[in-house]
Image (cartoon, rainbow, N blue to C red; front, side, top):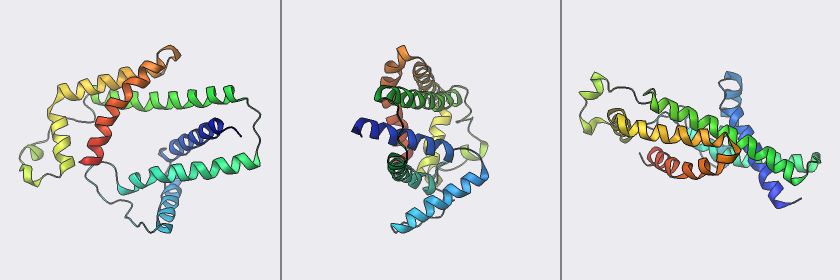
Length: 194
């Protein structure tokens, strides 16, 4: 099997696993939590699924990411040996890229909209305004800054929104794809570093 086709298959399966795990189905969520917890326990990593990290994400969410890749590799190998899909490489590449493109567009547009309309970072509460800076966690301080700076949040949201919309159309996919790394780097680094 061609290595490009193998990589595309792994990417497709990891996105499918990610999409399934991101659904709000309680049964699927419990199954996914069990899978991640068990795989992490095998390598000696133990964590409380609901441990607070300062943001909306928990340790479970951070440990889920490498588990997606491991499971995608395993499922890809199983599919490779059990089923022979007779799609030519170009068809498979087109289908995979289209699925990834629309999924990314959906996620980026959603994040852009919640920033543009001040849903993710609402006005600061009275309690937050009366809290000493030394009493805030790094993530709370970051979210307070983002809530206070409407212009900054709006600009980032608009940038994400336009990038996501570009991903919806084949002629503007490259433009949307080139616009995403800088903005996602800023956001992902703030999530991890705060």
